[in-house]
Image (cartoon, rainbow, N blue to C red; front, side):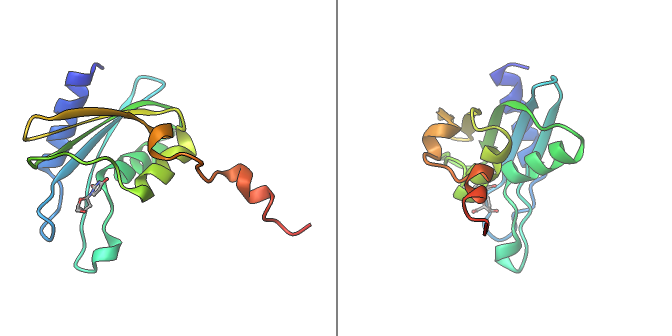
Length: 135
Ligand code: THU
């Protein structure tokens, strides 16, 4: 699946986003190492903090279906400007795909690409937990 297709699929996912509070409809496509792809969209809640972003929604769908290794993520937002994934999504993506690359695009036409490692330097990982355990 190439970037154009990934972004087109992310745009379709954004179309079904539930974002009545922010108005920002976001969609994501996550390409697994085995060739499968998973989509996600943001799902907001009247209790705002319960909102889930498109990126985490895609990761949780993928892991729920048995995929844990990922190649690339595409994110599309129905807005004039795009934005990089939020901190919570960076951390969740790092759990499974620290070497992930991401592309993003938006209705305004801008496209950007990032490496997760650049977005989340000095990431916290499971290895860090060992040092926290009481001996
Ligand atoms: N949002 C995402 O889906 N992904 C991000 O990386 C940042 C923000 C959503 C959450 C919320 O529904 C809306 O965008 C505004 O924050």
